[in-house]
Image 1 (cartoon, rainbow, N blue to C red):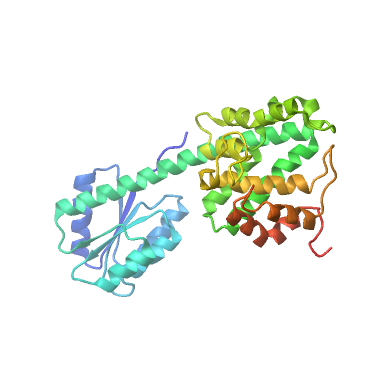
Image 2 (cartoon, helix red, strand yellow):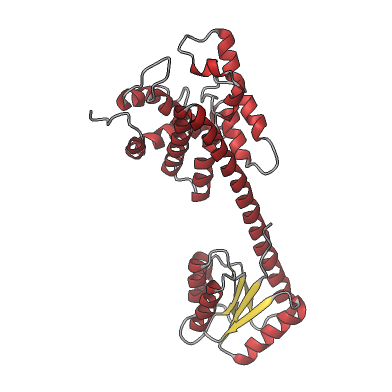
Length: 344
C-alpha cells in the first residue's frame, strides 16, 4: 500500500535572523512530523531541491522572500514550479511588489502571498492550508495510480484471452485504444485524459464475453433476436466495470459507445453532449477500425472509403468535433492501420 510521504517545507530568505525566526515558528506550530529546510538565496534553494530529488523526497512547499541578492523570489518559485509542479509556493513580500506577485501567479502557480512582517496566525493558517492541499493531491494521485493499475491488469487479461481465442478481436481492442488516444490529442485534451482514454477504450467490448461465440464469429445476417443479443454486451460490460477501484471512464465507454449523436443509438438513446466525451471518441475509433478490418461477414474497406463513411455520419452518428479531430489526425491513425493511404 502507498504511504503519503513526509511533508517538506523549504524556507528561503537572505536575512539569517528572518530565516531562523520563520523556521522556529513553523517548527513550534507544525511539530516534528514536518521536515523543514532553509536556504539563504535562490541558488541555494535550487541546490536543496536537487538534493531532495536525489533522495526521491518530494518538496511540498516553498516559502520565499521576494527581494534577495541574485535570484529574486518570484524567479525562484517559477524555477521550482517548472522542476516540481506539485510543489506549492508562498511568496513573502515586504512591500507592494505587484510585478513579482504577478510573475509568481503566472509562472509559479502561486498558492498565496503574505506581507512582511507577517502575522503569526496568518502564516500558520496559510501553511497548514497549503500542506492540506498538497497532501490531498498526493492522495488523489495514489488512488488514481491504483485504479489505473487495476484497469491495466484487466485490459491485459482481456487482451490475453482474446488473443488466445480470437486474435483479431485482441488486435481490434488495442487499435481502438490507440486511435482514441490520437483523436483525443487532436481535440486538445489534457495528457492525463488521453492516457486514461487509451487504456480504458480497450475495454469497450468487454461485455462480449457474455455473447455466444458462434454469434460473434458468424458470417450469416443477424436476425432481430441476434441484434438484441449483441446489444446486451453494452450493459453487461458496464456492469462488469461498475465496481470499486475501476475508473468510471471505463464504464462510460462500455455503456455509451453505441449511442449516436442524433439520439438514435442504443441502449440509452442519449444525444449530443449528453453522451460522455470518452464514449463519443471511442465510437469513431471503433467504427473506423470495424470498417477497415475484414470480418467473417464482410471484407475490409479501404481507408478512403472508410473516411467517406465517417464523414457521411458526422452530425448523425458522430460528434462533429470528434470527427474533425479524427480527420485532422488521420495520418497518424493510418500509420497504425494496414488499410491503405488516402492517395492510393
